[in-house]
Image 1 (cartoon, rainbow, N blue to C red):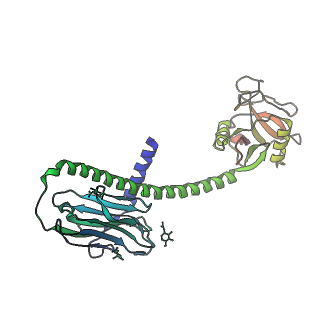
Image 2: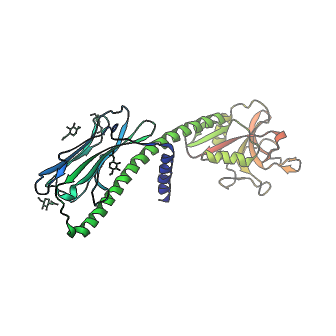
Image 3: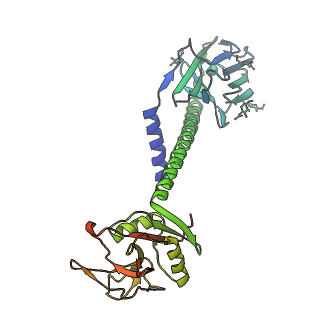
Length: 354
Ligand SMILES: *[C@@H]1O[C@H](CO)[C@@H](O)[C@H](O)[C@H]1NC(C)=O
Ligand SMILES: *[C@@H]1O[C@H](CO)[C@@H](O)[C@H](O)[C@H]1NC(C)=O
Ligand SMILES: *[C@@H]1O[C@H](CO)[C@@H](O)[C@H](O)[C@H]1NC(C)=O
Ligand SMILES: *[C@@H]1O[C@H](CO)[C@@H](O)[C@H](O)[C@H]1NC(C)=O
């Protein structure tokens, strides 16, 4: 859960870094905003309707994220009246008997919010702000706004509704937060798409790198990787195998060994070695597989091998397959080869067939 929150924080933080938010002035505002009347006379004005719209394809290529209508009254704070977003979420202030109530975001067809109600009271007076949040191809966010002021013809104030108004303000604040959250979800979805495409690119690169470093072949439900480069330490080879979801190949049967020999093909020179998973590092002469821990399932040592030969005081404790006496057979070799001795190739085995 904290991962998700962290991700959202990152998304929002990166969004703040890469985007510019432009506010429109009344002159260049793209939104059209009409109200059925500019004055409310309580008990006289039959209805109030609001029509806030954003034209289709204007400017071309811009996407509408959300639209909203808010109101600032003489004695009331900024209140969300209605919002609609690109996901089709439409919310409107509750507790009103609307006669018109709809909204839609579609950059091709045009976007709008339309609201209306009968017998508006003085609490409906104030400055209505119609806004459209729009995003361009560069992720710049534009806020297009237009205001309409509706005044009231009476000066009566109702002092008996403080508590109800407080609750209603709270509900409106919640509605605003919900709207903000919905906008964030849209932004997060956009960022997720970006991350997915970045991930796809990275995966493609990783696959290219894998193809440059390993030859692949499958046998008996396992994937085998033959390195095309020669590291100098068994630990490095083991780590490379782990990154392929595998381990240094463990020969269990004669058939598996035959497969490995044909996978290797014909090495170009005598004594070219391919590291396998067996080792007698822990106990001389007691050969076990370093990954699964069991004794070697099948061995086909070359004559005179394993020799446990010594090189500058270091003994041979790692299993290889090598071209010895014109045949690919098993042998032992150093587990760490100092540079002058050259490295060995290695073979990984993975239960995950890629
Ligand atoms: C619209 O009204 C709001 C709130 O009173 C104000 O902050 C904003 O500057 C106004 N915008 C225009 C374009 O008049
Ligand atoms: C709302 O305004 C738009 C843009 O001015 C207009 O095309 C549309 O007909 C209006 N709708 C209503 C119901 O008044
Ligand atoms: C909305 O309409 C219903 C039924 O017509 C009525 O009972 C209710 O009091 C009205 N509410 C408001 C806030 O006008
Ligand atoms: C937007 O309008 C276009 C053109 O009418 C339509 O093809 C498309 O499906 C609409 N998109 C949504 C999300 O409603």
